[in-house]
Length: 130
Image (cartoon, rainbow, N blue to C red):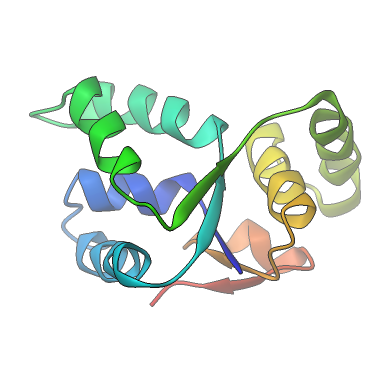
């Protein structure tokens, strides 16, 4: 099982000029057959960034796009994950956002993460962005 970092969602929906094609390929694999996980933090973070950066953005389209991915499981945030995230901040030198993603990924059983964020290279997850 792989975890999807928020940057992949942003690149996919925002059609990023450099990373959009890779993100689209990842999301198409998930749309077709690959099972993946992400945190309930992801839709909110994607909303904040896309609202600020995208020329044409709709919160409804974000939720509809994510909701249409039947193979993408959105994991709830819990106090246990927040507590683990605080530990991971110190252990791996992560910002809270990345530490929450790491806690969610590990608790969800993911061994790999789709992300182009090199901060995940210092964690137990194998980072993939292709």
